Image (tube, rainbow, N blue to C red; front, side, top):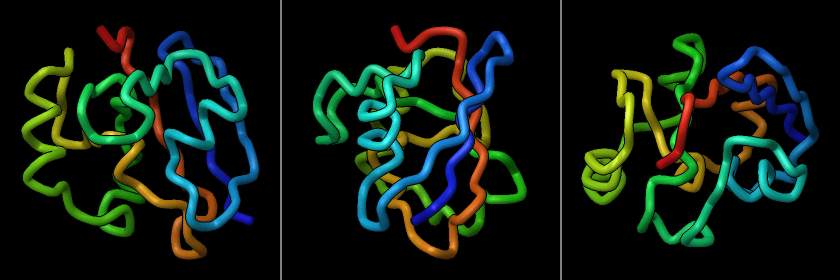
Amino acid sequence: MVQVTYIEHGGATHTVEADEGKTLMEVAVENMISGIDGDCGGACACATCHVYVDEAWLAKAGEKGEMEASMLDFAEGVEDTSRLACQITAQAALDGIVVRLPESQH
């Protein structure tokens, strides 16, 4: 199991256990984390699972692919640490990862 902490824009914190191999978007939806919509179901086609990866975890989360970078063009409030949660897979190296949620996904 991989521990993932989601911090809502307003500051509410949710720490959950994720099965390895699931995306951070799937884990958020399964745990009803407010602020992660995942409208496309994880197909990297909507940007409604936009998160800010804590800088301490950015390198371990991997690099954005071309498709992900393109979808982030549609997200609001994109920053250098912006990622799509559907493109980050829970794995042992990410145990303890912290992601923050933007004010809005639309």
